Image 1 (tube, rainbow, N blue to C red):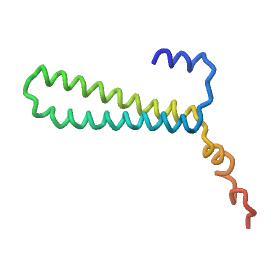
Image 2 (cartoon, one colour):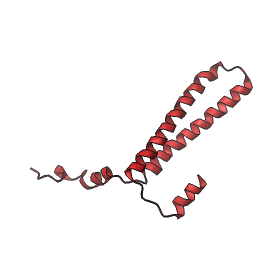
Image 3 (tube, rainbow, N blue to C red):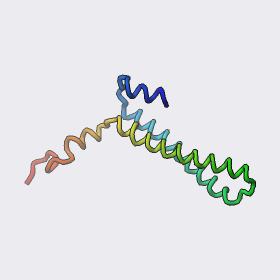
Image 4 (cartoon, rainbow, N blue to C red):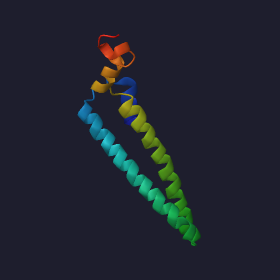
Length: 106
């Protein structure tokens, strides 16, 4: 993460294609789903755990997963969406607020 942050701050950004965007987005969304499943499983088991040491470990894992989950959501939002301009974004930029969307108006 430190290396990625350094590259973002001082490096030249490479163009990200729409295909790369879809792959990155799919990978992040898949990882987010796995985390949600894990958090759900831990949350459902936790109330039944009587062993104090196991409970402490599971609570620590759950807290860590929650923080990581929020981080990945933010990464998805900022790095993937925020750094990429898709063809759809360009069309929205050009035509979204244009009356009649370029067609002869009445």
